[in-house]
Length: 342
Image 1 (cartoon, rainbow, N blue to C red):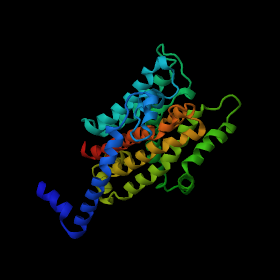
Image 2 (spheres, rainbow, N blue to C red):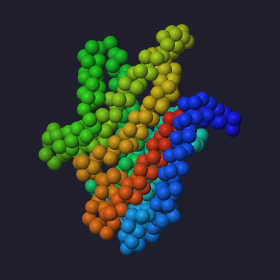
Image 3 (tube, rainbow, N blue to C red):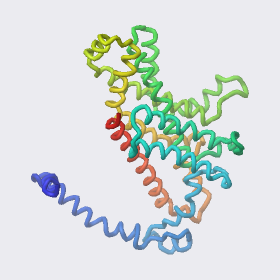
Image 4 (cartoon, helix red, strand yellow):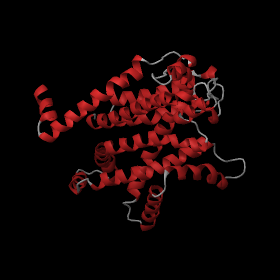
């Protein structure tokens, strides 16, 4: 293993030069970074001590001071266990698929049901839980809910659209093609504005959907257009001989798609589907523009009215960057785990 690593790092002139450049950059940049981030850093939530550092060391105290608001948003403090449980439920389902023994239909079911169960936990009104309006949902639970719920709704819709675009009915095929091209031709932020400000005009007065659900619908429709193209590409890669073999075995068209075609397509498309999930996980930050305060929005609220801690925004943003990196790494791990499991 050591010899193989040495060959990869110093196997030729180009690799050797790159390795030496990376080592030189690490030698130059790591010591001051270590001094700033660890040795000279202030970890206590003490604004005076952080100010005295004059940015010669990191002020991680801002994370300790604002962690609850950043992670949970404006959710009522006496009910904090509910968003923590909702976020834990979604993350647990991700971890179970990424590192556990869950695979196949069980994995898809776990990923789809976790946001469904998280909604009554956050909203309340059932089982003696006090109702909490969606305007107060925020932070990490909202980010996870939009990501998991968006993918759970977009995947079956994307599969349906992919099959519809292969239909022999020209009207259906044309309508679905127009939908996909329109969704892929506009940015997500435009779809969010349409859902927030134009969609209520189509509902009778007093019957418009809540802002969160309108935004989630926009996310689902937007993501489904991209997923449908991934699925359609996978369908085109299935060899016709498999369909002939299934027909020879007496399988119906539905059974062929259900048991032979679709499982292969989903396994082959798992990396691309995870790529879309990672993009959606990061794009949830855009919902701040329609007054839904997920992770980045909650951080903005936490620091906006606090002049004492606002100068230490860099450390708070690095904390958020670490959360996003962990989430993206976990979703990537899921894409690598699913194809290996039956």
